[in-house]
Image 1 (cartoon, rainbow, N blue to C red):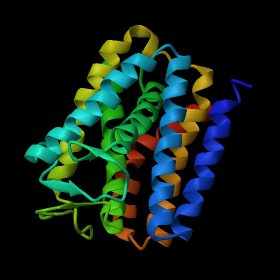
Image 2 (cartoon, rainbow, N blue to C red; image 1 turned 60 degrees about the horizontal axis):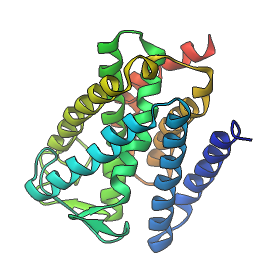
Image 3 (cartoon, rainbow, N blue to C red; image 1 turned 30 degrees about the horizontal axis):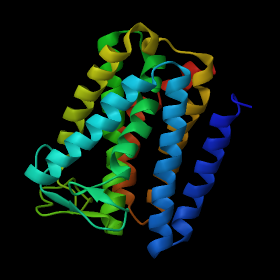
Image 4 (spheres, rainbow, N blue to C red; image 1 turned 180 degrees about the vertical axis):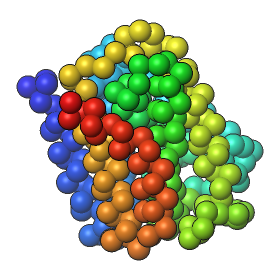
Length: 245
């Protein structure tokens, strides 16, 4: 039963995400929150099963909240931005689900990197690029929904409005720090691929494929589908043959 729980959570998450483009307004915001909470429970519970839960919470959840609080207050490192009230309660201007989102996908990016290289530096670099590349989907989608806005959204990537390029650089910089801290805090046990990682790797592949499809077809965001598809694909595509083997 315990071994089936990650797969069950993944199925529920997939169903919630499929429902997302079919709704709007408060229902869509509710599905956004539900997706993040389910993904967080999935990643954190899996990390604890690997005896790596505390390092993940300390680096991604606590660190994610800290960098967001700094970002809202100072504009560093993502630029000056503000969250709306649609994503639930806030502390220091940050919705409580935001650090959960950092954690949810940071763990998936890390486990994907473990399968691509055995080099510690390589793992940190690949995981950081993968996490930052996910934001090429996330931010344009959330800005389009009005969940947060930048005060100065230019210069932006060609075809992607509302999100300054500096935001992505901030994501990459923090992702490098996060993955470095995670690797150091977790020690050797966090750097060993295991067969039980399959649900999280499936989550990583699903997130990529569903994001490209949703942005290109359902959300009318073709430019972010292209940018995210290419750059996140640099981490996703090398993973596939390794999983097949």
